[in-house]
Structure formats: structure tokens, C-alpha cells
Image (tube, rainbow, N blue to C red; front, top):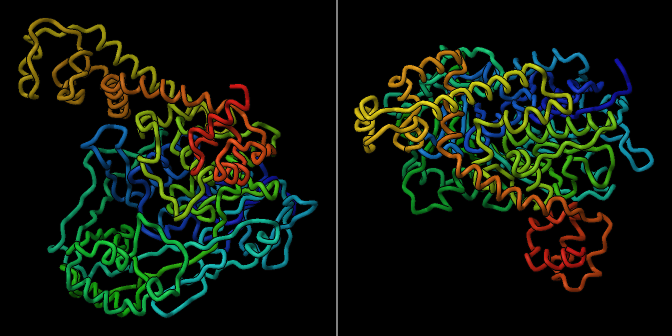
Length: 624
């Protein structure tokens, strides 16, 4: 066991696992310290990865060389592509996972990284020398030294659990919190806040009457998250189920409101608006007579189910009596009540875009301590913190993604530039360039960039080159192939689009919204031959080709818009500039710019309270 490392990662959640694996794979001697080595990347809330915008993030993590997508593929028991009725910019992959398998597969990944070591302990303080972080001290009194430290402690820092009037100290149910770090960081100039999140009850599947519920099976198409060419076991799938609350359920819940820590003032911290508790929902949406609940299996070999949509901090008896009134749950048994948890976070405006802290060099923050919610958001931050810590160790330039390059870029830029006033969750609406940031093209956007810094391996680059070649072959074939009315009109009429009057290039037919390439492969022999030559990648290649053809105009236009806006990102701002000297700036702009110290005009333009006229003042001052 060493006492000196290149990178130390504190915390073994989703952020910590991605951070440690990235740093280790980049050649850094890395130590991952966690309180429980049986719970790597524990799915503390629902056992699922991906979803709207979150699925895009998982694919981006994979394209860069992270592991969340690979581990999800190895442990998934259901896969669905959400929003298929909308355009490809909105398609979002989501997988239900076996919770136990997910953690086990992460451990296999981590233990397979040569440069990565482990220590099971609690970190109680940072080692700070001459104003810089030099390592950590653990609960056992052991000091480990390193050149960089990444803090990913999630909900464990001063964690407090609420179930009705009962308060328990913990970072998760049954697990102790971490003390000391916030107090030390506050002493070094950090702002510290409190946030809240919650989780629903877990119930016994043997006590559920599934006949009364609406079944929600996975997609029949065989899909996966990772771009790597590995096979996925699609045989072990389990369905989710939909249930509904009703007015009787609401009435039972309301009986406990006077004991709710959310309503009686016990909890004063900020909770996630987009994932509210059930008591929040029936108050905020009092006109609604029912709310949807999703019953999600926790794994293949367990009867435990997660009730998505029923997060609560009410007394356990109130939760239980209310659940008994849900159709299909009349005989339900619970394994564990829902609870709320309060924890410390550090407003992320105290970070650079590399996720290194401004107050203490060599210290990086990633995950929920930055005010985010969700496994995917945490994993993305961990990956980027691990990469940037590794690059700094090597003396190389930072790796920062733009808003036009990745949802990960949008996520980190939002956090660092705008800050948070509630737990941050990624949505497609947060991105200006959704048609560029699709789930299907994350490899095209990011794999080569990652290969340049030494993370994405040769296999990923080779697969990307093969994909581009196969897509190009399909597009060229359609550009060069002419279709006669006799060949295609029967199909076009059945598809609900006008027949041809004369010969036309196949690519012009494909541009029609009613025409699908999947249907055309059965009509055009040469197209079917090319599809079959793609092997297992056939559907992926066909999808990429169709999107590039149908949405070419939109993609080109959005790329041009992004390039125009990007010019503002090239205009650097001095971090030490005194904005109070510019009296032409609004008072709010002077205050916000002085506090946040943006690195570019582009970042300054996205700060809340900085108006276009303020940006004009800055540009004029800089001679632009």
C-alpha cells in the first residue's frame, strides 16, 4: 500500500467510480477511498439508468471511455427508447437494471484497472499545505498524500434522514454520514448549503396484484448503451407496471401532513422540483385526482419493487395505509418506508469548468455535492473531474466540452456559470443545440477528442471509423441509385405518400417523412445487401444514415448557429479584472461578474442578471 498517489478519489458512488477509472486508465496512480466496497455505484434510488437527456449523457460517457454504459448493458433487465414518436433529437435510451448485478459489474471493472488501488475507510479531513490540497486523512487517522484530490461524497456529508418525526444520521438508510469536511472547507472560504432529496418505499412483489396494473414491457428491438461491439443478454427481461393514486390515497396521506418534516418546518433545505415527493404533488397539483406510479423491479432474482413516483418523508404508517388504497396494492407489504435526506452541497459557481475548486488548488468536486441529482449527472462530472485531474498530473491542457459538443458540456457550464437554486437535473430543453447532441452520434462528437487525451482506446476509434465508412456507403448508394415509378409506387402509396411520376434518386425518396429506411430495405435489393454487410451493427448504421439524410438541413443550420455563438467563447476575460470600474455595467452585472469571474465573454453572457447591453459594454471596452 502506497502513501503517495497522483490522484485520490473520495467516495465510491457513480461520480467516484467514473473519476477513479478515468484517472487510473490515464496512467495515474489512483486511490479510491470508500466506506463500503460492496456498494460501488450503488443505485440508492430507482434501479434505472438513462431517460430523457440522461440517456444521452450515458452515451456520451461511453463515447469518451467511461463505464456507465458498459455496466448498464451488462446488468440491464429492460431497455426502452423514449420519445420515439418525436424527432431524433429527443430520442432517449433508458434501461432498467438489476441493482445487485450493477454494483458487482462496477467492482469487476474497477478491480481490472491496473493503476487503481482501494482503501475502505471514511475521509474526515483534507490535508492542506501552503494553501493547496495535498491529500486526505481518514477516520483511522491515516494520511494519504496525492497531487490531486477529487471529492465525490454524495449525500453523505452531514447527511440527515427523515421519516416523519424520526431523524437518523446517515448518508443512506443504514449507512453513517461523513463529518468534518464541510466545516474545514467553510474555514477555507467555501460557501456551504443544504439540499434535500428523497426515495420511495420498497415493496414485496409477492403482495402485488399485477393483474390490476398496466404492464410496461421493454422494446422488442435489441439495443444497448455502449458503442463497443459487445453482446448483451436480451433474454432476461422483466416488465415494469403502472399504477395510479386516487382521492382516497391522497386523503390518507393528508392525515400525516402535520407530521411531515417538509410541511412542519423540520426540513428547510431545497428539494428537487422535477422529482417531487408524493405529498408535494398532491399539494401543488391539488386539482388532480390521480398521479401515475411506476412499479420497477429491483432485479431478476428478487421480489423487491421500487415505487417510482411515491417518494415520501411521511411517517411509515401513513405511507403504508396510503399504499393499501392503490388499486393492485390492497395487500401490499413494504420492505422499507420512503425517506427524505438532507445533506451538504457546495454551490458550483466555486468551480472552474475543469471542476477544480477556485479556493483550493488541486481539489475537485463531482456529483451531488455540486448540487445535482441523478446517477447520470454524477457520473458525467466524475468522468470529467478524473480526466482533468489526470491531465494536470501529466502537465497537459484541460479537457472542457462546449455546449455544442455534449450534454456534459451543457451540464458543467450551467453549474459553473449559473449555479443552482435547486437540485439540478438535465433536460433536453437545457441544451441550445439538441439536433447536434443526439444519442446516436455521441461517438462521432467525442471519441476522437477522448483518444487525443489518451482515454478512448483504439477499439473505439476503429469502430467509429468503421461506422463512418458504412454510413457513407449507404448514403452514396442512395445518391447514385435511381428508382422508377414501377419499382416503388406500390410501396409509396401504402406508406401514405404521393407516387413518383418519373425516375428519381433513391435519396430523394428517403427524405420524405413517411418513408423509413427500415421499410425500404425490403423493397430495394441493393440496400438490403448493404444492410446485411453491416452485421450486428446494421440497425445502428441504418439509423445514422437515415438521420443524416432526413435532418441534413436542420443539422447544417444548427451547426452554423453554434459556430456564430462560439466566437464569443474565444474572447477571453481576465480573471482578476475589476468589473466595478465599468460604471456602464448594471449594478447586478458588476456584482455577478465580480463573484463568478467568467473566463470568456460567452460564459459571461450566460450568467443570470448579465444582460445583452452589459455584454455590449464589455465588448466595447475590449475594442470589439
